[in-house]
Length: 206
Ligand code: CO
Image (tube, rainbow, N blue to C red; front, side):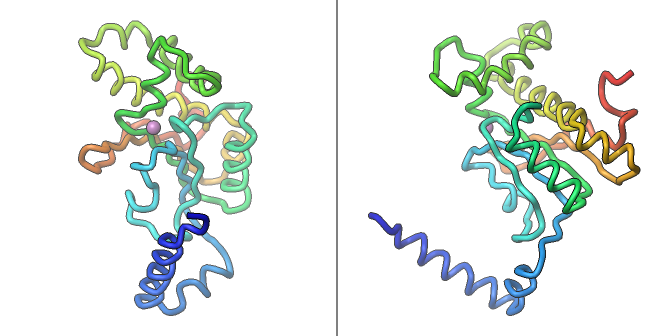
């Protein structure tokens, strides 16, 4: 109970399997990481970044939180973005949401959930900004789907508006910000077609 033996056993098996296909894998990786992608996704256990896009350790830098939010005052997320952009020089930031997100669902409910409501409050801001569009939808499940999509689009804008990303673009760094959504039901990713590659392309930018 205390040592979670099965996880250590699985770890040994996994490390062996990786070494079988590439004996040098861990030695090479221990020298440096050189990922091209930063993934900002939901903490949901059904949305594992690396597996979904078939990537090995070392290929994707990851930040996950409930409902894949990029809150301008969240030092954790901002530090990840800064390190990824300024030090790792990643080329793509992917904000990936998913349909049926429990965080988004909870934010749409009237009940109280305790401390987490302070975090979910940011999703209610997304609803407020788009309430006419959401309320016009027929049923709760299409409302939730739409909110999951709009939440991604909103977070893409938040990434683009960080000083880190804006400064990267100002200095001519090549960087794209993408908004994707994943379906837990069939394992398929969809591009929400909101790719931003420079300051001029930020939605609502004057
Ligand atoms: Co979620």
